[in-house]
Structures are given as structure tokens and as C-alpha cells.
Amino acid sequence: MSDVLSDILYRMRLRAVVYFEREFRAPWAMRLEGTGFAQFHVITSGAAVVEANGRVLELDTGDILCFPRGLAHTVADRAGRQATAGPEFMASLAQGRPLFTTGHRPIRMICGHFDYRSDLPHPLIADLPDIIHLRRADLTGSRDAGPVLALILHEFAADQPGASAHIERLAEVLMIQVLRAHFSRAGPKPGFYAGLRDERIGRAILLVHRKYPDNLNLADLAGAAAMSRSAFSEKFTATLGISPIEYLQRWRMIVAQDLLQSGAEPVSSIAAAVGYGSDIAFSRAFKRCFGKSPSQAREGHASDAA
Image (cartoon, rainbow, N blue to C red; front, side, top):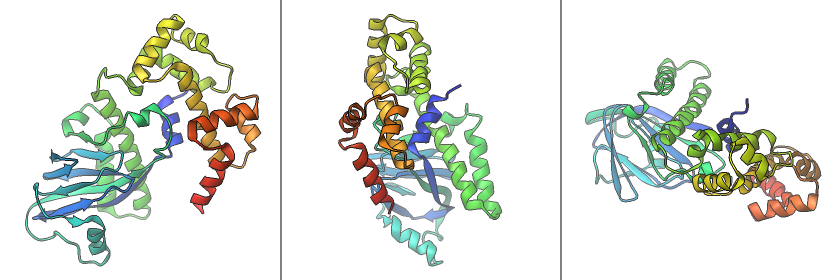
């Protein structure tokens, strides 16, 4: 059975980079500027505060804080500290003279970032907030987040061959748990995840992900949801913020973009693979979605990779 969320995460190319797990002693403060990466922090023991966008967030043991859009922020033992720039702190580690090792009120913290293709025109990405703050209590019902954190800490402590790669793969699993917990906590609030969890709308979304190359229409999607076309279209649009046919078209373009950037198949083959019998129609749809032709998208990706 197709797993819609896994489909999306695969196309996002989610990748974790973990900087460190270490102790900080007060007074300390570290400033991370907006980098375009989704920075994250996990408090493994003790407490800290984060200042971001005019807000002050208090973090306790077991809390996870993520900035999906790379929002600049300061993490410290208390608000108002003069902060050291993140690159300066990382340089102190590389030079073997780490900062913030003397003082009181020690805490331990994991820091890193998630890299993903934030340019995908998918409503799940549009639904991500600037800040996700999950408290330990928010993850209590998860059978996965706790064991994943325990494994990450074990890998840091054991320092076995391959530890860095293992930790980063585990961090990617942790990010999936964070997304699940965040969207589940949002409850019935409209958005893609709410649509995915709705029994009827979810069946229509699943049909799109299973059969996007086929000649699907509104009647097919409404039939999957066992609703009339008008009622289905109204509910789908109200929940996801886009129409059913627009979602189908976007998913086709997301798959097409991924195929263009991950292989050398001719544009005509990719057009057919996502349900277009005409290269011209496909190119027009692609340009409407991304503002560039399929060939330009492939060339631009190749230049960026080089």
C-alpha cells in the first residue's frame, strides 16, 4: 500500500546533519543566523531558553525545538545574554578549545540541522510553521521518539566506527517523529496532514499518489472518497487550501522535477511518466508550477550540483 507521507519525504530528500552533543555551563549563549537550513536542538538534560522572532521559549529536559524555515535564533542559559556567533563556537570545538565549559547549571544538548528541498510546491511544506516546540509530554505517546533519542545518545557515548552516519540517519527518523507529533497535536486544524488523516479525503490523496500517471479526473477522486463531486471538491479545498485537481497537477510536477534532477531520461519520457501525452502540454504545466522550463530546471540543478 502506498504511504503518502513517505512519498512526500522521499521527494523532499530529507537529510540530517548533527553538529554535536555536549555540555554547556552558565553563563553561555550562542547565536545562529538564518541559514536556510532547518536548525534543531534537543535538550538531553537541564534547561535552556531560546529567543526567536521576539519570542522567548523555555526548554526543559526532553524538549525538541526545530526551525523548519531556518529562522535566526539565540539559545542560552537565560534570556538577554550577549551571544557568541554559531560559527565562532564551532571553531572553538575544531581548535580543541571549546567555549562554555566552566561555570554552573550544566545542561547537555544535541544541535544540528535538517536539509530538505523546501522549494517543492507541496501543501505539507507550506503548512510548516517557523518554530516547532515539542515538550517531552508531547512525545510521551510516541513509542518511537524516546527510543530514537536513546539510540542517538548511545551512539555519541560509544563512539564506534560509523557513528556519525548512524547518528544522522537516526536524526532523520527523529525528524519524522517530530513532524508526526507536531501535526497530530494541531488536531482538526485545516491543512494537508488533516486531509491525510480524514478517512474520505485521505483515500482521494492516496489515489493521486498511486495513480498520478493515469487520466484521473474529479469524478475519480470523488469516487475514491465516496462523495458527490461538489461536496468532495468543497471539503478537499477547505481542508488543504487547494482544489483536488490542483493537488493532482502539483504532485505530477513534483515527481517530474525529481525525475529531471535525479536522472538523464528525456523530457518526453518524463512527461509520459507523469501522465502527459504531449511534451508541449507538460512543459507549459511545468513552467506554470516552477517558473522555468523542464530543460532549464535540469540545467540549473546540474549547475548547482557542480
